[in-house]
Image 1 (spheres, rainbow, N blue to C red):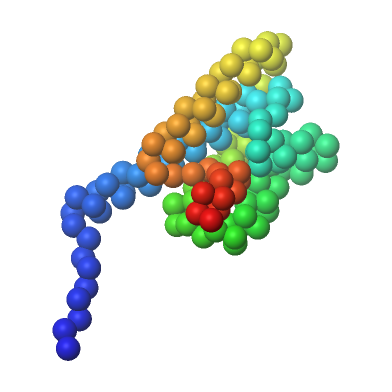
Image 2: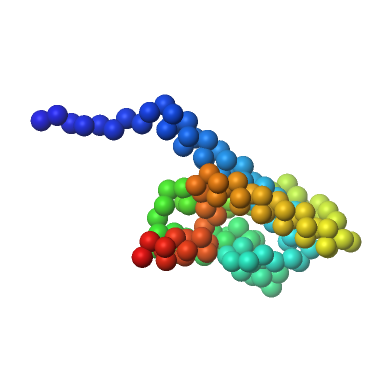
Length: 149
């Protein structure tokens, strides 16, 4: 009996690699917008990052841990490889960006401009991740579960 092994083509392998790189790039942009512009100016976002921001503002508990904890529960409900990659990538880069930007306060006296720049970076990052068949976790997982069933 012959075994049939599906070997991915070079083109599909390059496409997958490109998707993962673009998802990581998009989430780096999102992380910069969130931690450098929105959090220092006490501006929240929607979904799971918004919940993580509120917990951070109330307790000082780092946003990456709250973000990851909520997403871990959601990931157990719907395991998708690119979503798992995205959640781990954003959690990692939130930690790195917060350490790098510690003590740096940009546009603290101009919260509207911080909101515009932060939201632009977050929106652009999410757009890049979505266009590469990625996700940011959180409410995207809930939407995927609803869409599936």
